[in-house]
Image (cartoon, rainbow, N blue to C red; front, side):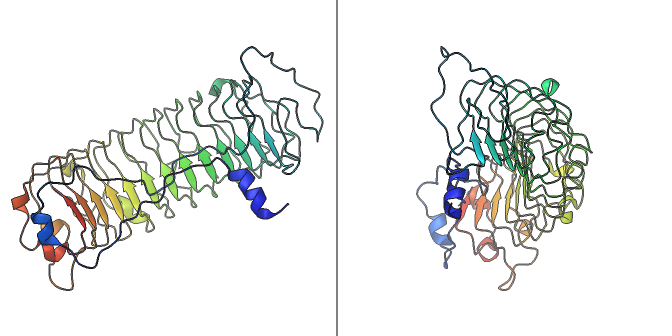
Length: 380
């Protein structure tokens, strides 16, 4: 089968937000900005990363509630379970999604991509996947699986597993131990409250971790050893402090909608590849930040909107998008953007949001056009 056909069958149904881009203009129309008759009422704030999407590729119409649940058939190492579908042109995939299943059917040993999402599964018995050691994708999201009804080592033999989807379940703790081969772990929309420091130990190949919309109040140093981690989504939790230590590989960090009020000195300096930081809707104050907390040359987008800031924090001249709306800022300090203002020294900032603060338009300093000459959108 052609490689392109295989890829389509695996990825069909995946959806995500497009990468937001801002077109840089050669000439900055500062005069037009000051002479606007009305302010821009809203700004299309598009995420720079794809939204978490289910590994869904193929399905038949769901069974109705009136249809009797089929009895599990006798397990064989090659035969497709009668509850599922195994397309002849994609023999390594098994589709058991959206069928009102309350149990996990037998998984033949040849399977690499298995889809159990959108069912009524509540438990995973020990040894459920011991026969399916070739598994690479396992979709269990949108079920009712609880931590108490999971075997302690259900994923222990899946040494080729790369993507595990268990979002939208009833988990109260991280499943584990998890195979070292894992690259993506999707656990959003569960009931997890704590991530012990050793919970992700050994996952040196993990690149994306989704833990948003849980009840996590403590992360410890659980991220520190993830040397391949690129994206960490910890938004919509109960965190009161940032995780202890970030991996050097990290590029995207999402901590919005928590209760964080301070960030340690040089916290972001250990991640020289960090591009996007979102910490909106927290409790950050200027007292909880050092003068150079966000002065990282790698960060391109920084969202600190809807916090308790009274001053604009100092940022690096390489920053392109800064969101500070909904704070308590009462002055426009040009030194936050440019330590020296002249022809050769200026900020690369393109988008600046300061609306919803106590700053007035006439408070913009006269040297702002020189420092912020690259800006195309400014909201005050």
